[in-house]
Image 1 (cartoon, rainbow, N blue to C red):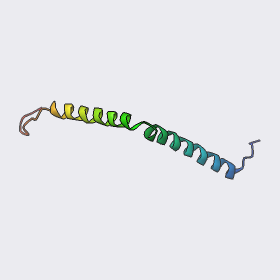
Image 2 (image 1 turned 180 degrees about the horizontal axis):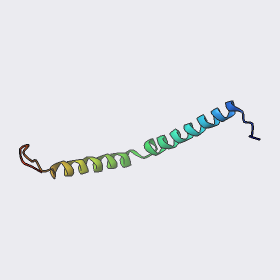
Image 3 (image 1 turned 135 degrees about the vertical axis):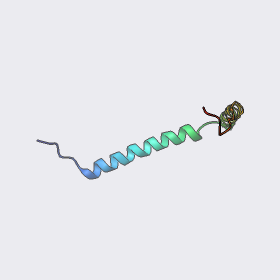
Length: 64
């Protein structure tokens, strides 16, 4: 025989788990010092600039 569960409790438990996951993501995103956030942003910007600088422009009529 199947186990009887309270659907209201199951729904609330799932909502709590979702909230915990959201809180963990927010802690990792916002719980860092400003210097660390700025350093990460500067590294990302630098990598994007290096990548854009290494692009090869090809004419549209040239076969690849």
